[in-house]
Length: 496
Image (tube, rainbow, N blue to C red; front, side, top):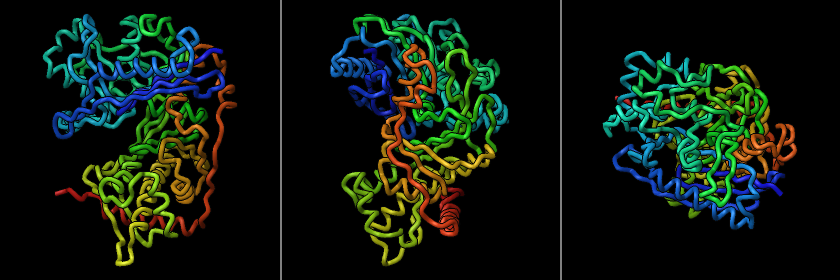
């Protein structure tokens, strides 16, 4: 039987999963790696440690599955986006630690670009909002900090997101590529052409010779050298993590939406083959590109604090011992007793984009209990996702009747029912909620010929449960009215 090896390289850990031709996970391995915080707001990874963690988990997963490299017909890679590595081509070693997507060290540089009037041009070309979140300013910072801009111009250095780093290492330097989804998050790719943009390269002072070739998300993208696994294995899938989850959910038609409930919440809606800029300050991004077919696009919005709010109940307030206990605690009361929690601990993301907002608990009385606060915390997550979907409906002109969900927090039946009630739409949870790794697997399977079409994949996806709205429209409207009142109280908290 042929197998696929999926590499899921995340922000805190690396996973490797072996899948069979029916799309079922056979075995897996996972390894955490070190998070470095050299200064306030700075977040770094050791790219060599990441590489070693990927290699070791791949070996472990293959061994646990009882197969060899010769049984694997393709590798699929999905990865944390926006995190960048710059390395020396001669030695294959990084010249600086990888700068992580969460890192804010280039905020002042980004603000200077905004004040100079570049934001509108950047959004039109890239679909992105001007922010330190994306990769371009991170690459510029590393080149300036290390004093190696001239080496970059001479082609002595290479730079890329984690997918480019892994494909380079797996191939022993023979493949230096990034797929369109990761390239679209650098703030250096023209969203329409799918190519590096000269104006943006000039603006960020990044030589073209530094960057990888932009390729499809699915196809013959490179080969893992036999040195690593005992046999050569084609790399046939590369895709950024949130786009991978979108494809793993098989949201392949315009208007289909998925939301991943993790530390934050990431919502993407497929919009088809024409990129449409958001009027609600959402992002437009490449969703995937299969072979020689046109690029498919998506609109994306993010909630900064999703599951992290539950972690705060556990680690900050200490009213629960484990994250799943929040469900039992919240279920002790029928409602939140008028309490509203706005989890803006690090500001508000889309569609508000208010970095000065702060977390708020409103409506407290002497009758408020820990159970009310727990329930209000779950509702605060669901309210934020509801705001995101409303913005997507406004941008697309579509009514969304069903939202597909994945990620750890979607295992909560209570949260998912709250979500359906507030959306006034169905919430569909698949049996396999780890859809990020599955999306990369689907890309590798299509690229290797294991599966011939997306239609074949539709037969693989299995639904676990569908949550339907169970409250009246007037009750939903009343709840949303109170939520928006709370949002107004939480915003601009740190403004002078």
